[in-house]
Length: 130
Image (cartoon, rainbow, N blue to C red; front, side, top):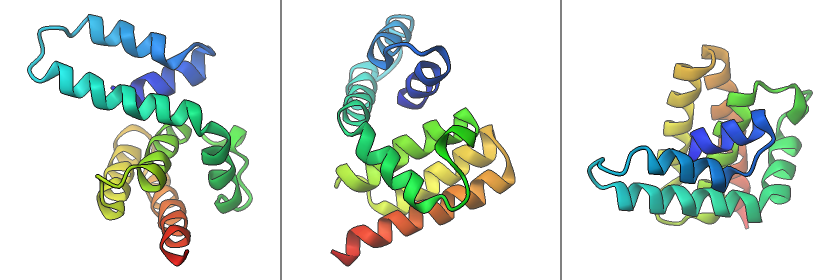
């Protein structure tokens, strides 16, 4: 849900919180909806508040690839995963990375999965080096 909101907001140049609210309203009867929306909102708000830092990290480790050149789905996956790695201690880094890699393979390309894995591993490595 958070990934969808971040992706759609990037493509449509709209507010991701508003897009998340629209999606949530269409799925009100879904099991555990409150928890799902709550966590998605936490991710989206976190990405909004740390957007510059997240994009700077992505840019500094994506050698020869500007963020603008990346496929939009890869940007969205990376933004969610970088937020989880840097700002959410409840999700272990290897779990956040593995989920992002699987999403990249499913929604983008096999090569994107490799790129996402390498970039997130490098970012995670800087976090533990501190």
